[in-house]
Each structure stands twice: as structure tokens, then as C-alpha cells.
Amino acid sequence: MATAPATDVKGQDAYTAAQAQQDAAAHHATRSFKIWRGEAGKGEFVEYKQDVVEGMVVLDAVHEIQATQANDLAVRWNCKAGKCGSCSAEINGMPKLMCMTRLSDLDASKPVTIEPMRAFPHVRDLVTDVSWNFRVKKQIKQFKPRKPDFPDGTWKMDQVDVDRVQEFRKCIECFLCQDVCHVLRDHQKHEEFIGPRFLVYAAALEMHPLDTEDRVPELRQAHGIGYCNITKCCTKVCPEHITITDNAIIPLKERVVDEFFDPLGKLVKIFSRRKRD
Image (tube, rainbow, N blue to C red; front, side):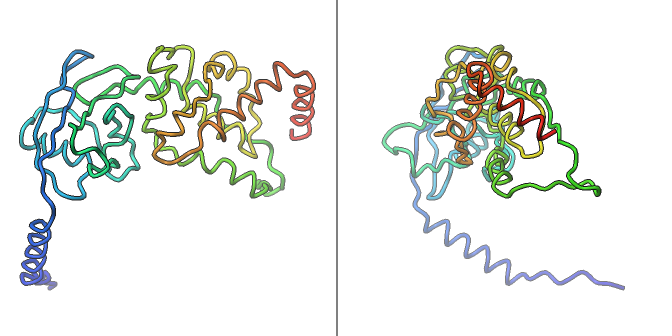
């Protein structure tokens, strides 16, 4: 009969003592936080004083405030590792992930302001309704591969073409690029413009070496690529460092110009598609 392994009490005690020593040695400070509280767009900043320690990120502080001072504070988060995109917010007026923003990088002489993203409908406190993004994604034509190159159903691709689209696959859909985009944030053109996140998604499909679908007419009309004036603010806030403007949006704009405003470019595209098909 199998027996359960003995508990290493000494090991646990040593770990607890080491952790306590580390906590005691950490630099403690009291920071001021102004967090947006309210529902459905109505509310105000509420200031909290919170004891913080060296190494904490903004999400750590929000959790401490939630646990000790504001049990009803609504905040969305999941992985706390910068990979799920759930804890997007505006920190000191800039769209950021709370779990990837260290308090040590923020001016300690001023309160840390934390508010929900402004480009989407406000639900409660730091939570917004981002479901519009998922509806937009469904509007983009899906991947349509060309016929296989070989009888066994496989294709031949150049590595350089594969590498080109790999960058776009890093997106964690935090929607910070959508939030910072002035077309959505300031002008509320949600019905006319899909935003940088989905221009990246469209680019990943359009530039895929196997894809044969044509999304250029939709990019010009239904998806509103003309609204983007390439300020590169979306690239600046991307936590995955995707070169959104230069590598995705500008090449898509060039395809629109080639098809609709350059007769020679349109002919080249037609013949290249026929050759590929």
C-alpha cells in the first residue's frame, strides 16, 4: 500500500523564514492612487493610499486596494504575465497593461491615475465592454488557401514569406492599439473603421504565402483604412512590440492604392493572382 510522502516541515519553515526576511528587506513606501469608480460612463476618481513594496506592478497595487480598502472594485485580469491582454487600462493617461507597468517606472511624487479604456463602452470601474472587437473580427474574410503544390496535399513556401507574417501572430488582443487610436477614441468611428488591431489581422491574412482571398475592396470601403493617418501611436503602445504601422497598415494602404488608383498596379495584381491560382 502506497504511503503519502512525508512533509518536509524543516524545508517549509526555512522557506517561510527566507520569504519573511526578503519581505522585511524590501523597500516599503506609501503611494497614492486615483482609480476611476463608477458605472456606465458615470463616476469619478477616488484616491487611495496604499503601502507598496519594491518590484510591484500596478495590478499588484490594485489587488491590494481591492483586498483591503475597496472590496467591490471591478477590474478585469487573468494571467498577470502580459500574455492574456485582460488587464488593459489607462495609466497616467496612457493605454497600458497593468500587469506589465512597474510602479518604479512611474513618478512617485504624483498619484498614479488608473482609469478604463476610453474607446469602448464603460461597464463598471476599470472594466469596459470590448465585444465590438470580436464582432469586427467576424467581418474580415477568412483564410482561403491555394491548391496544394504536391499530390500529398502539402505546399512549398519561402521562409522569408513565412517570417513576414509571424510578427502579426504575437498579438494578444489587449486592444490597447484600438484604445489609443484617435479615430476610435476621439471620433467614435466604430461603424466605419476596424482599427489597428484588425488591420494587423487582415495583414496577417493578406500577406500569408498561401492565401488567395482578396480583402482590398473591403479595406478601402467597409474597413475604412483611409481613416488611418499613420501617426504610429498604435505601434508605440503595443506590449508585444509589433510594428503595426510600418509592417501592416502601410503595406495594406499600398495595396489599396495599387488596386484603385494605379491602373498598372491593378494589372500586375490580376496577372499575379492568375499565375498563383
